[in-house]
Amino acid sequence: MIAPALIFLISILGVVFAFSQPITSDLILLAGPSAIASVILLFKEAQTWLAQQDTYTDPKAVVIDGSNVMYWFDGTPRIEPVQDVVHHLSKLGFAPEVFFDANAGYLIAGQYLGTKPLSRLLNLPTDSVTVVPKGDVADPYILRAAHETDAIIISNDNYRDWVAQFPHALEPGRLVKGAFRAGELWFDLPTSSAKPKVG
Image (cartoon, rainbow, N blue to C red):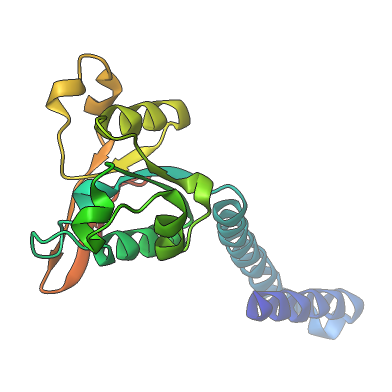
């Protein structure tokens, strides 16, 4: 933003100088368009800056199916794929909320892990991590949370058994699938204009 501001300042000085000295009136032909161009550049950079501030101050909701994502690396349940997805989405300005089945801790650590230890592993507040009660499946909790917060869902599950109860799960762009390809995280992440591959 500094360069366009300097160009604008110099251009305005050129315009003032051109009007103040009849002999340099032709300078307006250069200074005038330069001033207009610098204003346009300043406006565009200001828009970009404001968009970045919006992303920072108003994070978008995303619900992560932790019990699904933990299998993404090689089919073996691990916490690392969930950590990578949380980290990636947080960097993009999202506010992740992660849900696990009650047996997730046994699968990744050989013991029950509740909300507090999992939130520490994911570097998230405890209210952003949910371990559903034993005997329940996380699917309806995930779908309900996504519906209430208008969030996208990160999972390779299609939730076919639940779409009658939660039809919003079928909305285009609602379910975002992912994987690790050659050790690199990849998922289809919808934006306002496209669905880029993020990895």
